[in-house]
Amino acid sequence: INGCLDLGVKYLTLYTFSTENWNRPQEEVHALMDLLVRCIEAETPTMQKNNIRFTAIGDLARMPLEVKKRLDGCIETTSKNTGLTLVLALSYSSRWEIVEAVKTIATKVKAEELAIEDITESVISQSLTTREIPDPDLIVRTSGELRISNFLLWQVAYSEFFFTDIHWPDFRKVHFFEAILDYQRRERRFGKTGEQIK
Image (cartoon, rainbow, N blue to C red):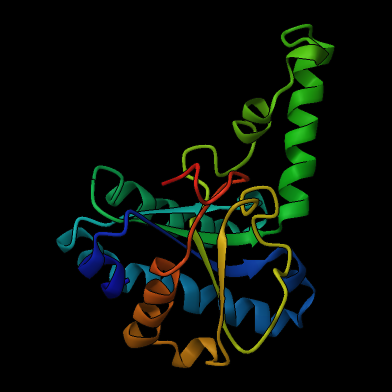
């Protein structure tokens, strides 16, 4: 987060808790939820001081009621901030998100609010939980893993990827800067030739 503030990055999304994580032992899930909300509440004054807007995406209805209430409080407190938008993906999976988007679109078609031929990439994007967040430019994958793990599958179509063996708890600002420097050396063509984008 501090690295993003230093560089003027506008959006940072952290994959914090997947829908699959609900299958972990209940004691662990409760401990994670408690730790999560305590950390967010503890950091809210710092977010306010640094003009950070905090929000969350995912199946938030599955969150325990007290956790959801406290989470909503932090989101509301920082809602007017205009600097970095910090997004936590909580109870999130991209497949869940896409299924929910399809249901939303199907409901509109059934109600004759939307014609099938009017379903576009934009309509799908606007039906996702990330509709107010730009698609990511860079995905950083820690821990030596070489997979996306059900994260932003629709949104990463033209994202750059940076893989590192550093485990997430050890990932620091210096590692983030390494990822940014690597990203800056790349040529992003979005399907065009190198000559077309020059």
